[in-house]
Image (cartoon, rainbow, N blue to C red):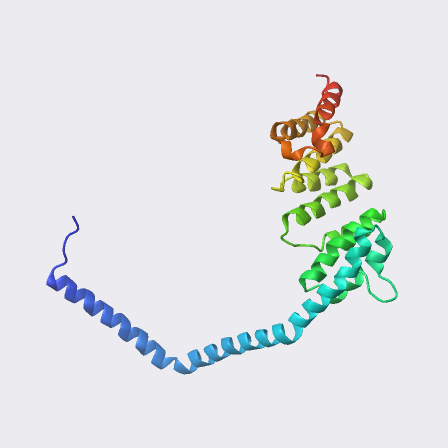
Length: 234
């Protein structure tokens, strides 16, 4: 049971509280001018930000949202050249990222530009634009990382490819993670590290679910395991 404070202790606590309040009041009185300036500065920054957001950023965001649709259509139709460079009417993903890179659509354009360049076989340019993307969408984020791995694999740098494939395999999406685990395994095999490849293949098999049916990397996982086991001498 807590000990009840005596009248003297309660009186002392009250005195301490009053003293603290008095000190605070004294500080405010002495520094009222400085505090007023600081408060006005904060309010001014907030006002400027709201003004910039409403008069500049918001319209730019809306315009970028309109422009990206055309390039996305070209991308979906497999016309990657027009997707990145645009046509006689609309600029492509590259121009969109350059002019509206601070907007959500402008940042998304960087990812699409990178994916388009990869499809076109321009791996260095693909890496340049993929590296610009820092969005939070799980599937796109890890697809970008995985495609960077694909670029390095195509450039013959298996070690860097593995780094990116393993990062991409951290996705919570069960349709994305196994694909990049298998790709990392294949890259390990190219380096003769069959044991590490087997570890990844076995993880994919252990985690496989009916929802993953139709994913070649999952459907054929036993083939990957058998092949790597033979190469590994097991």
